Length: 152
Figure 1 (spheres, rainbow, N blue to C red):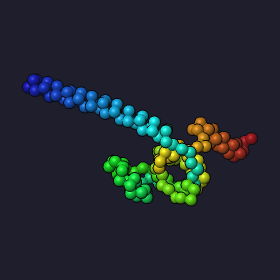
Figure 2 (cartoon, rainbow, N blue to C red):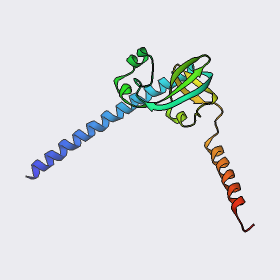
Figure 3 (cartoon, rainbow, N blue to C red):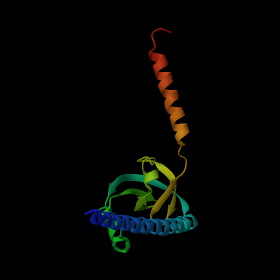
Figure 4 (cartoon, one colour):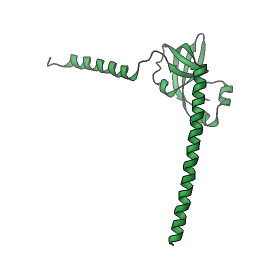
């Protein structure tokens, strides 16, 4: 009886060890791939002035992307919802994919400058940092509260 429990524990330890080693190498492979993709984006990005029309999170097939782009995407990317921005660039209306960190900062119905790599919006120019936004919010809040204080 004791020998069977010991065998089960050894087998489970070996399985978990093999899984940990596999995940380690998978993480290392994906991180090198991500660094390579970031380097390629940095090389190809350019600053463009766009007028934002609409922004939404949906699947690429629902976003209005060209069929060639949707077909070249991996299967997992076709299923997942991603942030998309419909914008006017010059005289042409284009649908862009957007970095999730930048998506919330981009305003609607405004002329803005963005860094674009192909159809991917990488960065938004002219936005405030988190510290500046907090300072601006605190300044408005404190002045608003000071105007309401009847004990001045």
